[in-house]
Amino acid sequence: MLNKLIASALPYMPKKLIWIFSKRYIAGETIEDGLNASRELNRQGVEVTVDLLGEFISTIEQAEENRNKYIEIIERFTSEGIKGNFSVKPTMFGLLIDKDVCYTNIEAVILKAVEKKTFIRIDMEDSQCVDSELEMYRKLQQKYPANVGLVIQAYLRRTKNDLINMGDIHVNGTPLNFRLCKGIYIEPKHVAFKAYDEIREHYLDDLIYMLEHNMYVGIATHDKFLVDNAIQIIKEKNIDKTKYEFQMLYGVTPELRSSIVKQGYKMRVYVPFGKDWFGYSTRRLKENPKMASHIIKALFFRG
Image (cartoon, rainbow, N blue to C red; front, side):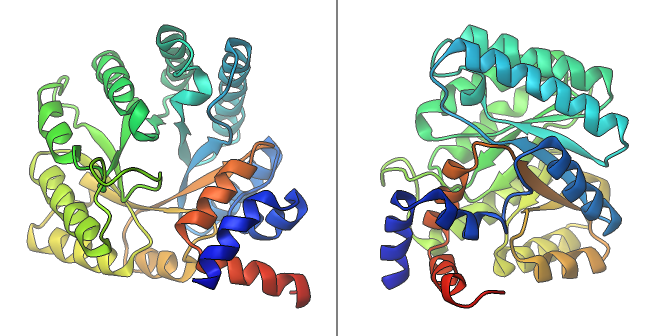
């Protein structure tokens, strides 16, 4: 309860305080910071998905600026040989301002990815965005089947039906490519499952469906229970290692991440960077209130 109270209060405190928490989970503010973190992960046998922080913009000019930044990021990371791909949030490209402008901006980023023979993952955001993001993914996947994927959130009540309904959009046998996560946005009960065990149950059910229907899955979780069960499912169904990978957030459960890599499974780490880190950080606090106590300790016990 105390941790939850601290987590609720921290977003209203000075950014310097929040940075004590954030620097563990964010590579930094610049492209160079993102490159350095990605190189180190590559040295550890881990691939990356790169994310420029920022979302829910208010002007079309901001959307165009973000498009140009992503094109620059793709150019830099690919030219320097980073093993990884890229994640984009549609609200950062104008989704809630003008859906057509958003589509054009993200398609420009995907065209750069096609040029550089890399991959773009469309992040799934809160429930107000889901229909638009599914529609956008459908259109883009038809045009660039090997270069675009989507995030799926297991806690949404609609997710299994969404997976079933997307079964008709395979192009030339290219598997649909999804990142499966629990979900982080605060949603009402009629939209999302709330009970911890219930979310786990639906996560595994979605995972089994994907593996049984020739969908490539990024198994994105820090929950050891889900990791262990996913490995058991993979072994029982004799799923080839080219059909899935494990994914984690930068700075989260590094010991579990290392154990997965040592077992020979492919791992990808989500590497966020950028000046707009505050919203991302406060969401991490709400997701994991236990970290709030570590921030308070850090104020008094350096190192």
